[in-house]
Length: 426
Image 1 (cartoon, rainbow, N blue to C red):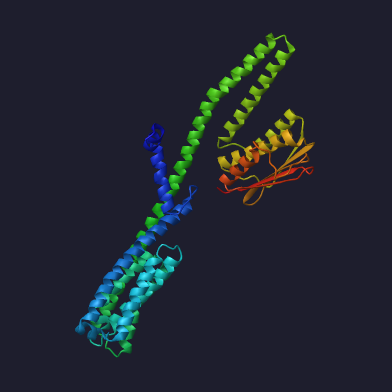
Image 2 (cartoon, rainbow, N blue to C red):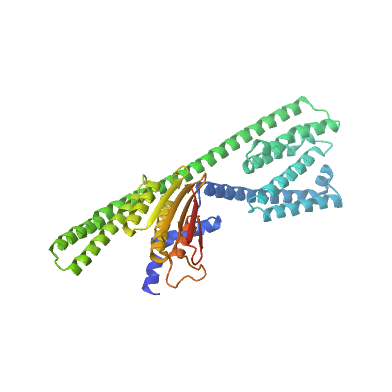
């Protein structure tokens, strides 16, 4: 194994990235997952795990059902004999397997599980009510209804979703009356007892489910906040280091350039030193802008307007800046992308287009911000971008990275118009 490859495999960051990538792929999420998407993925995983548990519980009931069909005394007690009973059994087996195959689907999995669970409950009600002797509220299978209440509450913890299981008891009592069975005082007590147990199970499970979901959402939101705080702290640390290190070096270069400029007598040498000093001043100005954009209180609109004015003064090009709409807060990455695209547009216009005027418009919409840079220069053919020029490609990559759109419209002799748009919400 090559040393570089070995170092990469032993790097903890590589293992961490691989682990994160594996979890995201398993949950079908992207790197830019939001807290809402993470919570929805967790709820889906939880539902799938519980639906699989339901399938294995069905296998147990199907095994007992096969035993009922196989033992003559049991099948005669429930009145399940002949081909019709076997057809019903295999229909239950088929829809259970079909439900298992679609569990992972976000929408179909839930609907199919709910419908098939209602079929299961209907079959249980029939098993409870059908025997003429010892059936109905006297049936030993009446306690099975509690299991279905538990399953409904675990899988679908909503009041209306649990309603079919809660109605099973009054339906059983009504069937007793329709079948001319006498309802005794003990059976009424049994009905009340099981109803109280049902309400207790529903309350406890729904309450615990809501607490669990709320706690998970809170943890996900706290993780997002901690991540943002870590990013802010790291940017602040980098800003201090850059300011104290690189900023001090550039300031020292400017001072030394001024000192040497005062000593130099040759005009060509003074011109070179002056250009060196101007480059250092431009670099330190760029550094200050970058440090400002790394801070939370950076004012994007004012920063763009100041840059346009400074760039126009330096290049002697007629630059006009216009802002419309109410400014909205953008993420640091979005602010940096906007600023870099503006820089690239102005730089390209001055270097290649030879314009007389460049118009810059920053428009804040309800949910998007638009940057439009238009010049009246020479323009160019979009299909014939010169080799080695990656400005347009870099702008498109920056726009795609934050979910924005970039449109470039140009033709020889008709100037160039660059439109950049991105959502204001993160």
